[in-house]
Length: 353
Image (cartoon, rainbow, N blue to C red):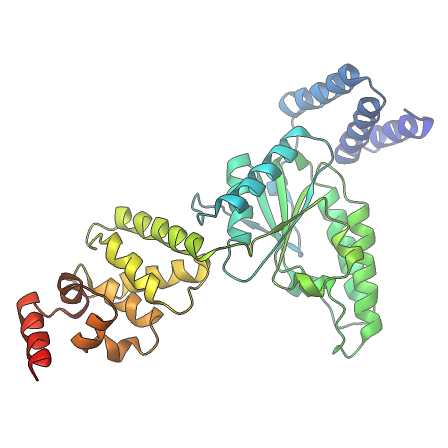
């Protein structure tokens, strides 16, 4: 511990700046831990934890910000492939160990579960989730965006209870990319430079997540600001089918009026030329269920078929084409509403011609 740390503690105490005092004490504990005195470090952290419960403090809910929006987290998530789920568990482990791993970048195509995973982490850790409102941060006036970024991070660093908070920069490319088609390239350059410097100064008690679909366009200097990077684009076709099956099972439990025909659902997926990622598929399934005909438990499957199969609206009216796709008489009955006996007669008549 240096003289500077002691002076900072005294100054923050006299200024009644609880957030800064706690952050300085946390940094002191970290220094002791790095120096090998883990017992003293643990003692300081314990004192800080006790202070949370014994001293009345304002909560993060009291924060009034033009740049941050508090999100209510609903306990629902997209199922993920094992390889990505393992990385998410690793992030949870790193956060729980308090060793300074606190900035995470999730990248991958839209609908792969990046934002939903952050919400799930927030729910698991019982932390409040604040999402950056980029429309308030980005300003057309010269130099104002950079100033807003500085104000934004000042607000984040002043959280009274950083241990109960997660901050999400959803689609951070809105701030981090150099806009070569911008009217003022230098202005965006200033904003990006400010973002990098502010990330360097971010308190280690703040857990920050960022998401992007444009990872390949990021500068390496920006990527290095993150402690961990997770690629959400690692879905195999088997993963996509498995995840979608878990989604349909979830909805089948929620809505008793739909038929649970997992075998047919998987066969429809196998006929699709390209499977959408889970986020889009979840919306597709939900819409198919919502718009399905009353008293027809299989109508949602027809809608899913039409949405996924090229020219599906026409094919589903042609029994022979469905047969050629490998569907059984029972499955054709479900998809078309035509009885098996009628379908069998039509196909027999076709063979006899």
